[in-house]
Length: 297
Image (cartoon, rainbow, N blue to C red; front, side, top):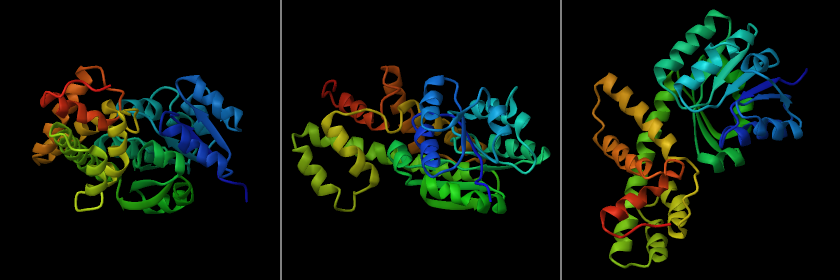
C-alpha cells in the first residue's frame, strides 16, 4: 500500500519542525507557506513545493494547516485557491492552529459539504515540543477521521487525545491557554518578588521547582528568565491572540475570567513596549517594572 500523502500549509516556528518530522518519518510531503524561504528549506530536504493551498490539497490525502489566527485559516481553507478548491472527496483536513471554536465548526460544516472531513487539533508544548515530536494534541471532530489520522499525530506528539465533536479541540486548547497564562503570571510575580528582596534566584528556583509550586512553566522558563533570555518559545503576541479568543468565547458563554482578563492587560504592556515577539515569559519584565526594579535586557 502506498504511503499516505501529506500536505502542510504554514511553516512558522511550530509548523516547520512539525512538517519536518513527518518528512523524516517517510511521508511524501507537499508544502506551502506565504514566505518562500521555509518552503525552499524543506524542498531541499525532500518535500514538494506548492504554489497555493489548493495545489497542496490536490496532492494530499491528509492536509494540515498551522497558521496564526482564525482569518488566516479561513483564507487558506475557504478563500480563493484555498484547500477546499483542491481537496478531493475523502480527504481529511487537520487544522493545528489555535483559532475560534466557532470558526472551526463552520469550517467543518463547509468541508463536509464537499466530502472532506475536518479535525481541529491545536497543540501545546511550544517550539521545543514541535522539534522533538512531543506535543500534546487535543482533537475535535469525527472519531473515525481521528483514528485515520492518529499515526500522523503520533509522529508529531506524545499525548494525543480525542476530546469531542468539531470545535472541542479548540475549546480544550483555550482552557490550556488560560491556565498557561496564569501560570506564567505566577512565575513572574514570584521571581520579581525574589529579585526585589535580594534572594539568590538560582537557589529560589532550585527550591520551589521541587515543591508544590513546581510546574512545566517554572522548570522550562524559570532558567531562561534568570539568564535574561526572552527568545520566544511562544510569542507574547500569539499568547495575546489566544487570550482574546478565550475571553470572547467565555463572554459568549457567560463565564467570567477575571484572572485571564488581568494577565491579558499585563501582556498588553509588553506589546506596547515593543516586546510582542518575545517569549511569554517576558511577563516578568512587567512585574519588575511595577516594582521599580528597572529594565532588563
